[in-house]
Length: 221
Image (cartoon, one colour):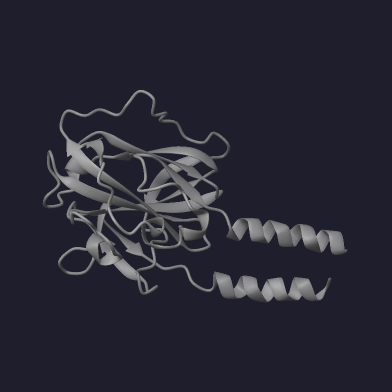
């Protein structure tokens, strides 16, 4: 009985601790799993050596450690975005380069990102921008950022593998799943200038429920 309880406990803890890693374009700094719940994985300032990125026809690649998840990509044209508010429009809405969409499967995923079609003011050849990936596997929002310089002539390097996980997997396809929590951990409505929109619904209650279950399991040991 104790062995079964400990096995279940380990499984639950592993689920809570699951993460994702941005592979391309290069993130602001080395991945820190404990910091990914913070703005830009807790890398507050933009890097000086920005990565070139295609204005059109771009992709992002990431590794998912969740079997089901949602992803949205925010964009800032601020030169040194240091807070969630730098990724919002003048009306305070999240400025999305890619609407929130659901995906499934663990492993590597390749997500199209055509910044030229966003209609966001300032997104043009030679512009310095920052993207922030917002990933949610059901246990809260996780964040990673990449600082970019956009180029009409740059192409994705051949060394970047653009393939998706093959075990019961699919790349993000459906809009309006769970979106990110704001800096104040409240829900918000996300929109873009492309005419598409998705609700940014903060997932709540998981941590509290898990704590009660954890306490009950420990009590049986």
